[in-house]
Image: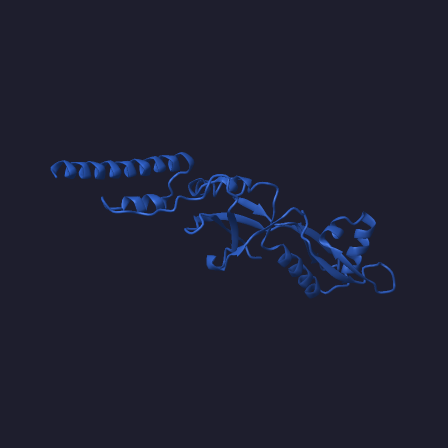
Length: 231
């Protein structure tokens, strides 16, 4: 009877130590692939001896599971919207411009931002002359339309590729100086009319500045939050 009891106790400890060793090995493997986040370290520090604990092991290496969000610097981050990548240098938006043909007969021409940027010197001069007939309010409406189309878009030239394999700690450390810390929207035209009825065209972009990051506790995805100045 005593021998049987000793065997039971020995088996119990062997099993417990074996499970413990497996957990230590798993933790070591985790540390080789990822750094523990602040939340993970806090959870482990609060664990009592003999109790069990579950922690989110973070985003797997080489995962493309990340999202970028932006909100106006004057608004609450709760209003942040997801940023959409584009490969186009100019915003993909058009406007119906009446009377831009340069002749006596009113004409209507639908021009995109890329169309305007690609006008020849002669056509650009005719275009600006026609815009001189527009009121300031009409030009302001056109400006707002093009800018609104550019908002929540950023030109993706590969600068966010580093986020595909980054963990939360490395993302937080790169908020100010990484290649993705500042993003630019596609270019959009801004029409300005002076006192002489002359119209100038300036090309502007919206700058998004990274401010914070977190990790989704359910799927481990990385979320980066940006702000931009409302004008």
